[in-house]
Amino acid sequence: MVVPMRLGRIVCSISGHDKGLYMVVVGETPDGVKVCNGKQRRLQNPKLKNVKHLYETEYFVSEEQLKTNKSLRKAIYECFGKYKEETLCQKKI
Image 1 (cartoon, rainbow, N blue to C red):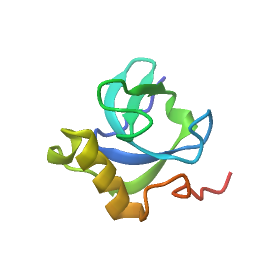
Image 2: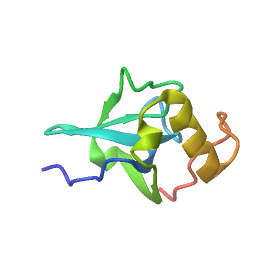
Image 3: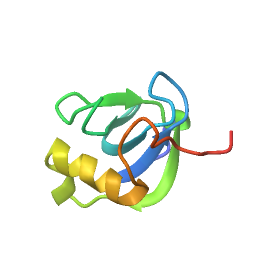
Image 4: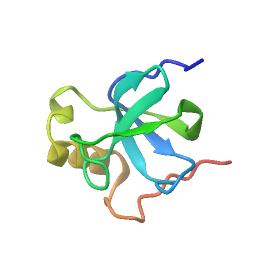
């Protein structure tokens, strides 16, 4: 069973090749949620992730910011600082 995750929530990947990267939930499926960050994963090709492999942050992006990759990157930058590989999630595993 998939726990519902709200559209626009900023999450951190805690497993997989994108481990530690902040991403935004852009869709839901019965198998998980679709996430993207505007750089490695663009809006045109979101990644399907299992909810248990994501850590929810307290931040959300607006619908306006979900329209382009550039605005998505900017929203993540505004929440967490410099948008580079150093912008890694510091979740206690």
